Length: 356
Image (tube, rainbow, N blue to C red; front, side):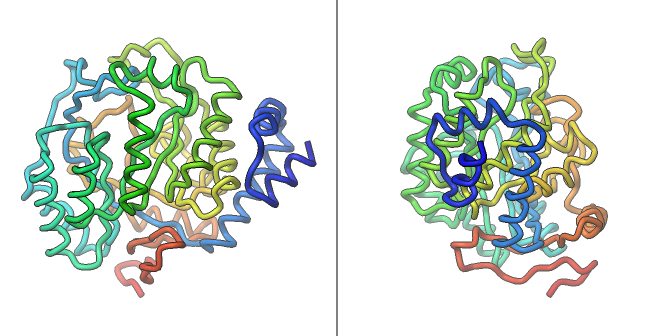
């Protein structure tokens, strides 16, 4: 085992059989050792900065029927909403005035937002708010659509692969194809987006081999961002009688992902904070270096219910978040916060109402 760990720490890679063996046999001592190495690696690359993203959920309509998601098309209990162009600009403008420069625009797969409409919104945002980074999280689109969004000014794109096991993926995502998911991710890379992938921990029928596949898939893709969260059950989905994923397992996979992809931007996801009140601190301690704070109006946050009791922090609660970070030796940064290989980073250290 020590030989495998040393190889991981020194080369940031393992063969499939080595990784499966590690996942199967990692006891508390090994898990803590991996976590310590992941945390030290993050500090050596990004220092004590935790990059804050302002998240706007602009539509909860979705044409998909993912088996675990509360926004699935067949869920008639959802109170659906869409933000207009003006509402989107107003919401982002308010957070921009507060100091934020990194924005994530997230929705279900909603074809109401056509290529032209979404491109127009992106162009207007980039014209009105100088120096911002726009991340889209809107699901699967064509190469041409992704290209148009990039031309309009989108900088990043989040599209979790959810699971790298084709059989598991297609069972949990009716009428969807794992090959198409991969196509989207590699198209986004080809178009020079900063790309985010990621997976769920605790999906039905997961096993060490499937979890190892996730890490190997990420190593081959080399995304700039990786989101990893525990499955949280929603009562209005086909998985309603299943159990939530484990926070401890999620933290373990955050650490392993950091060791496989040392430079990745890795969020401490909302789901971790939902299941564990100390999830923020534990996630950072495991190698996470990004937080997403919500700028959606409160009444809309409650409608964007991917799972029950979703814990969200507002962008305007930054003082409290910054204090929690300072208590463990970290600083909140609210500027662009690019992947270290992208040279657009500005200084943006939070100092109350003042930044430098």
